[in-house]
Amino acid sequence: MAVPSYAKINLYLKIGKKLSSGYHNIQSVMQRIELSDNISIEPTNEDKIVVESTNPELSGEENLAYQVALLLKKKYKVKHGVKIYIEKNVPLEAGLGGGSSNAATTLLSLNKLWGLKLKEKQLIEVAAQIGSDVPFFIGDNAALVEGIGDKIKRIKKSFSINIILINPGFRVSTKWAYSAFDRKRPKIKTKADISSLIKAIEKKDIKEIANNLHNDFEPIVTKKYKAINEIKNNLLRNDALNALVSGSGPTIFGVFNSIYEAREAFFKIQYDYPFVFLTKTI
Image 1 (cartoon, helix red, strand yellow):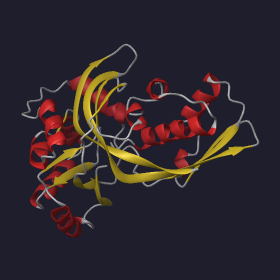
Image 2 (cartoon, one colour; image 1 turned 60 degrees about the vertical axis):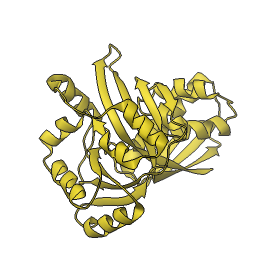
Image 3 (tube, rainbow, N blue to C red; image 1 turned 120 degrees about the horizontal axis):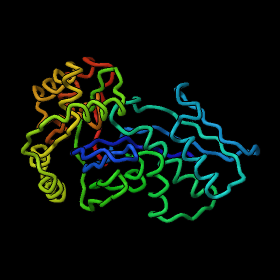
């Protein structure tokens, strides 16, 4: 089977206390986007897990897809082998949840392939053991995500938002971003409100959505990486309603009123950065 593994953006991200487990409590609104990797999974005669990818960095045991396959294999005493092939399109360490999506897509695929018949609650419990963003990708809709990423409330009336993604060509480690946030604990003043954001999504009010974008990581990453603010300003100059760092960065997304404004902006700035992608939420 071959399936898309969609990336995500954080329309809102508030970071709470660090727990003894090493995870942080979060409050976030996440939504998948059309940009995706592609994952092929096939059974093998050998009783082992093999991960291969178009990106050689991902062909190892540290890959989250490998880890979720190994966890399932041990937990449910699966005696079959599997080969996982990842066609990588989503940038690495970019704040887009590419690795987490790969893990969730692998989990869902192996649940079918190995006939495990796990329900959504069980799948989320497994996903939470792999990483805090992984449970979100078990379902389809936009969601309010809380706890350590394991409390998911789907936003049923979510709709498609036209966005431009810009990645400046360098990586930001999520581990570093959390560590820096814990050290500095910046006092963040914002008018953005998560309840207003969710209501705006349900009402399909794109301007109110833009007014309520927020990310606690943004002051941390923009202070270290000056290019991020320049990219944000470029998007705003080109008629984005608002722009925000996704996750721990460094990818920035601009929200546009319609596909026409988004497309015009894309044509103007598509060659300014290593990775510029015209897409939309799903």
